[in-house]
Amino acid sequence: MAKIDAFFKLMHEQKASDLHLAAGSQPILRIAGDLQRVKYPPLDNDELKAMLYEIAPEIKIKQFEETGDVDFGYEIPGLARYRANFFRQRLGVAAVFREIPDKIMTAEELGLPPVMTKLAELPRGLVLVTGPTGSGKSTTLAAIVDHANRVRKDHIITIEDPIEFVHESKNCLVNHREVGTHTQSFSAALRGALREDPDIILVGELRDLETISLAIEAAMTGHLVMGTLHTISAAKTVDRVIEIFPETQQAQVRASFADAIRAVISQTMFKRIDILGRCVAFEILVATPGVRNLIRESKTYQLPSAMQTGRKFGMQTLDDAIMELLQKGWISADEAYTKCVDKAKFRPFATSAPQDFTEVGG
Image (cartoon, rainbow, N blue to C red; front, side, top):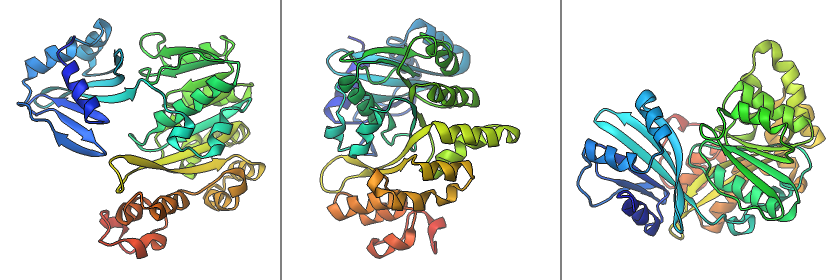
């Protein structure tokens, strides 16, 4: 057993989402969104480096020594998988580990809106799951892919950096590919995937112009493509995809994206106040013909209105989702106010001044 495994067992017992290890600091766990120090002496740089290198593949150690940053996956059978990131900081090495449960929670267990499982049954198109880091995008996508794996008879290829949730083939054949281990890049894997007879392609992160361009192309050529972006709303996601391209290409890309897109799910994480844990508010944009026209005509500012009037298609705005969580008594009024869009709508519920002073008077 690796020496660091003791911290992972503690992490699992405490139901922590993340483990922070840094030279010069005590180990720290993130539990229900808050950082909590572990009763353990501050870590010495050499001690921590030896601990980290014990579990890292040689190729990843070499990459870390050359660049100062590296990502990879680590698994303790019977416990969980971990997404690892090593980096250098002022006092030496440091690492952050995110726990990836070995059991994939179903859409029903997560309480995902019904429209999200319907997305897994689409024959083709682009489905984007967006939100800030740590908002649960990977967990949501895993549940959608798991649904497809159970109800379809198709070939699923996942392209991730690193592999997070591991899907055992059920009705589908599932092949996992890890960037840096099984392929050179997201774009190289996507190009290869088009020759590998896939029906569903999961792209862990749409990071750059080439990857986004290939994802749109794959979605338009008869594949169901799912991916994540670090954006904070459905409308901003559309803008981000278009704006990453040179201005001379944006009109063409806007038309292609409007044809390819099937849904944008934007999620925001909240701390629960009724029990220990967290919950998610989902903003859901379904690409109806009207929504696609708004995208083609560069009227993304009208998308929030389209979501409000598109409830029968499963659409909802972030504020409506937040209000539902607030009325259930799951989240605090102050956090709802901090993370909502329409501050005036939530101000009557807030009990204290907003945490973000720039929102005052908004």
